[in-house]
Length: 498
Ligand SMILES: *Cc1c(COP(=O)(O)O)cnc(C)c1O
Image (cartoon, rainbow, N blue to C red; front, side, top):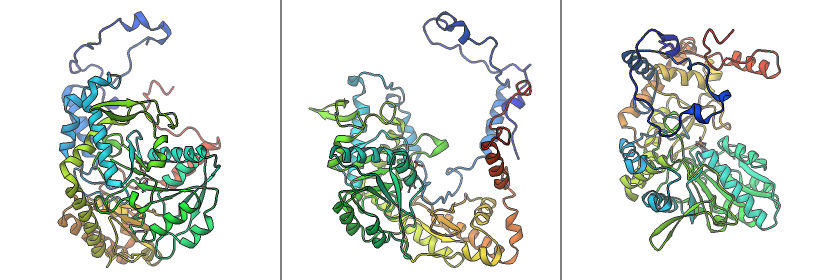
């Protein structure tokens, strides 16, 4: 069940589909480019007939797995359905045909959309302003930490540490380290929530910020958040909210009201824009008043009904993304917000929490739950017992789900749970889907207890089975120390490899 590359299928003698001539006006390349930059022979592109091209891509698409085919219970990632309406709005010629260099007067509609999206996001998370520029959640974290660093600098304070709980998403310590901070880990208590005693012992005049997720990555609400905010602010540090996943509480509670000073949101999670291969992301950052002067420039401002891009922001950390962010994603997210309305968004969150608790209760009979429920929008189970008794790991369960037509949940994260299996069903799945997922888990766990060897050989139905991760890691390590050849990361024509 594989598909050769179009280069391998290529038949040089075939008559390819006719394409229109390039209609770019202006001089021919040979008239403007220096001779050494011109090709001496045409590129080695594959040649196929139109039906061959069509079949090649259709077969490739059938090897894929996506949210438009089946359930995608990836915890922390909020793989909810991406409405077609979003795509229609983004394809409107007035949006799709824009050029980022257009004059402000000709893009008033686009600026209006950005202005209104900013207001809507401010309302959802309870902050003063939002920048739409960052292109992903991690990029949003980094942007916020740049603003927090600029804020402390402006007060002549030299704060060098960022506190991160041990349950945090890996991007949190990575963003802090990339911003030049020392990362200090804060421990969780046995209930899965941050330990206030450990937090107290780590907070100091060196602390620039505490990065927190609430509900945390175990799907648990940090009930002592108001005390945490007070402790952090008492030392002059800032409280940062990792809001990549806001699915538990849109319209129900707000990070701004809990005392957070900055928050990033992933439009490609909570606000239904596509993830990864489906399109670029967007990770807007909201801030309270103290951080507003440091927002990336330009911001969108409204003056007497006219919208302008404001570049004159003397304390701004500068631009963090070309132009104004991934504009097409902003259109999709705003479409989702308008289509849902305020009541619709809070209903979505209630349904997400209900789905997660329903599914958690169904699988509780089969998988260990290391923390007491109820959960928020996701839950973390553990395959720990199966590993010690039957030699079946979280990875085996994930692979076995692939053979039962489900995407695997997140495994081995959060790191504080051994053999973690993190499941986030989202509000867009039906009860029937959740029931059949729970039935698959039941079947796999029964298999684990009777004949675990079968599971070690799964998946059998996917284009590739188990990858040899150990061999891959060994080879990469050998390559890094100069004891192996380059890993093969691209196809080369037989004539090229000589
Ligand atoms: C997804 C996620 C991130 C990172 O977002 P990217 O867009 O993948 O960079 C950060 N924190 C949490 C809790 C997440 O779930």
